[in-house]
Length: 229
Image (cartoon, one colour):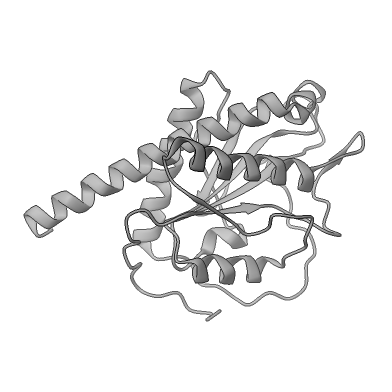
C-alpha cells in the first residue's frame, strides 16, 4: 500500500460491491463484556448485512473476513482497495468506562474532538497513510448521512456523524465510514446486540442506507454527464 494517497478518487463502477469490514478478529478480541466479544458481534452483523444486500437485490457485499481471522489494519485497507468496491464500511461495537452511553455512532475521516472515542490500541507498526482525498471525504460524509437517516427511520438511536483519524478511514480509494453499532459497556444495549433479531434489524437499516447513498451517487453521476460538471 503506498504511503501517499492518490490526488483523486476514481469513480467506482455502478453495482460495485460494498466492502464490509468486520472489526477485529482472531487474537484481537476487541471490546469484551460479560464474555461477549466485539469481534464476534461485528462479524455476525457483517455477514447478515451481506446476506440482506443479496436477498433484497439492493447491492452486494464483499466481506473482508468471513471467519474468526485476524487481519492487520493496513492489510484491511490494501484488501479493500484490491476489491475495487464502491464504498468501505467498517463495523465495530463501542465500549467506554461509563455504563450510560448508548446508541450508534458513525465516523468519517477528520480531526476528532470526541471525548468518548476509544484510545488507539498499541499495534504493530503500520504503513503510513496520508489523509484521504477531499473527494473521498465528501463522499464519506454523504454515505454516513444516508446511514444515519436510515437507522433513525428504523427508530434506532444514532448520534450525529463524528470525525476521527482511525486508520481505516484513511482509505485512499473508497469512501469510508466506521460504524459503532452500540455499546457493550451498556448492559441493556449489550443484550440487544447479542440478539440475532436485533442484528438483522441493524443489517437491514444499514442496507437501506447504502441503497439510498448508491441512488444519490447514481443521480449525481447522471447530472454530471448531462452538465459536464
